[in-house]
Amino acid sequence: MSADAIVQLKDDHKEIRLAFKKFEAAGEGATKSKDRLVEKIIELLTVHTYIENEVMYPEVRRLLPELTDEILESYEEHHVADVLVLELAAMSPEAERFDAKTAVLIETVTHHIEEEETGWFPRVRAGLGRKQLTEIGQRLSAAREKAPHSPAQPSALKKTADAILR
Ligand SMILES: [Fe+2]
Ligand SMILES: [Fe+2]
Image 1 (cartoon, rainbow, N blue to C red):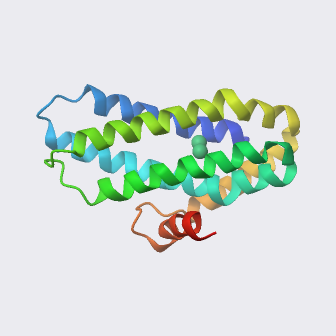
Image 2 (image 1 turned 45 degrees about the vertical axis):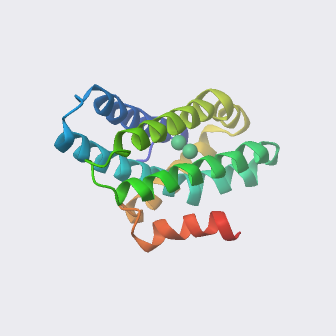
Image 3 (image 1 turned 180 degrees about the vertical axis):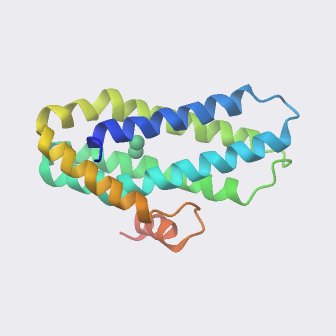
């Protein structure tokens, strides 16, 4: 049984925010654990972005065209996060800008999650029935099964290219 789409995505957000908190709590010199945490953050974001881009956003846009502007802005926010993720994935945790880049990624994604949770997810819940949200939830679960876990995988790079070329 798949959870309702919004419940599922909010669970992801919770896990992402927890990883952010752990990074922020790590000490100045904790290079190894910060490296591992950034790896975890990148993996969580890669999966979550994929399932939103592939399923949630196109479905919401199709079913609730009045949310098109919110969806388009969300794609752009994902794209900004993707760029930071790609750069971080290739960066040594000892690099001077590693912490700064991670801090900007955290700020960007936190803002984006807040817009989803308080801005337009409530409008999706109001606009779609429980049955539709469960169906989208099932498709999110299916997409999760085949989602890339690293930004270097072709299916993850594809959405980055789409954002530029589309
Ligand atoms: Fe998103
Ligand atoms: Fe999200």
